[in-house]
Length: 553
Image: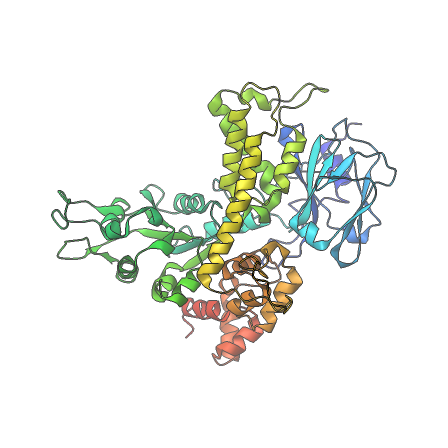
C-alpha cells in the first residue's frame, strides 16, 4: 500500500507526536515513552523516533512491520519500519501501573529479544528499566530503544557539531546558544569522554570570537613547575632555559577563546593568577615587570568534584565562583542511550572513509546480510560506556580496522577486551572519587550490619543509575536541597548527584530559574535565603550565586 505524505502524517498521529505539535521545550517538561531506531538495514532510518505520548490512554500500542510510524525528531516525515523480514503480527506495548510497560507477543509470531534475552512470553519492564532504556531486537534486523523522552520540539538553531537528538543533548545545545555571544566564563562539567572540548569549540564557533584563535590546553599535562610560564608567558632569562620570551597560552589566545581542560589540576599559584586574570583582566608573565591586559574568553572543564577540592583546601573557592559564571553539565552516554545508533553510524562513516571502505555501509540486496549486524549494535547499546563517547569512538575504530576486507563486521576478542577494560576503568574511577572525597558513609537505606574484613572498599555505595527519580526527590527534600547531604543519603558522589539532577525533569536548578521569579521570591521572603530555598526548591549555594548574578543582594 502506498500512502501519500499527508496520509502518513494522519496515520502516525495516534502514536507519534510530531515536532511541530505541542508546547515549546521547557525545564520540567513531562516525559513520555518513545521508541527510537538504533539500527535499521536502511541506515537513513537510524535515529527516527515514535513518541508514544498516549500509551497510558490506550489498551495497547502495536509494534510490527506496519506500525507505529517513525520519523526524525525535527521533521514531520513518518513511515513504518517496513522491513519485509519483520512480522506483520505485532508485539503489544501495554501501560501498567507505576510506570511499568508490558511487552506482549500476543499471537506468538514476532521474533524478538529484550535486553539480550529472547522474548518467549510477555515481559514487564519496570519504570527504572524504561528510564535506563530497554533494547528491543526484532527478527535480527531492527534494533529499537524503548525509553522516556520529552515530546516537545527542539529549539530552532544550528546543531553546533554535536551528534544526537537526545533531550539532554538538546539542553546542552540550548545552553551553548544562550551563552555563546556573552563574555562570561563558562565551566563545563561532565565525566571523562563526554565531549567537553567539542562543546567548548561549539561555544567559540557560535559566538562573535569565531574568527579569533581557539586554544585548548590540558592542565593535567603541564608540569606544575612550568604551569605559570606555559599559561601566562615568560620573559627571556626569567628562569633556567628561558632563552627567549614566550607569549604563553593566554597570549596565543588573545582576542579569542582559551579552553583549560582538567582545571581541577591547576597548581595553587596558578589558581591565584587565574583569579587575577578573571577579576582584573590582567596577566603577569613570569619575569615581567608590569601586568598586561588580556581579552580572552575563558572556558574551563573538569570531571572532578571541585566543591570537594574546595572543602579539602586544594582549590580556591573564589576561583570556582569566577570560573562558574555559567555552568553546563554534559550528560554521560548511558544517559543518552537513544543517541548510540546515531553516534555509531557517524563514527563508522568517518573511519570507513579513512580506510577507503565507505561502500561497506551501502544498502545490501533485499535478502542480503548487511555488513553491520543488528546483534552487534544491540550489544553496544546495552553497554554502560564508562568512557562515554570517546570510548565508543575508540571501539568503532577498533572494529573497522579489525574487520578490513571482511564481508561482515563481527564481534572480536578485541571488542570484548575493550568493553571489559572500560568497565574496570569505571569502577576504578568511582573508587578514586570516593576515596578522594573521603566519604565512605553507607547510605541510610543500607543495612547497619558491619562489613566483614574482606569486604570491598566502598561497600554500600551505589551506581547512579540505581537511584530512582522518587528517591532523588525525596533525598533532596529531606536534606532541604543541600546537595552534599542528599548525595550522602543516596550513597553516591556529589558529582554523580549533579548528573542525576541534570537528567531529572522534576528538579529545577537555580541557574535555570526565570529572573522575575527569583526577584519576586526575594522580595516576598525579604531576602531570607533559607525561606527562598524552601519555596523554590533549589540548592542554597546555587541560589546565592543566582541572586548575585541578578544583583538582587
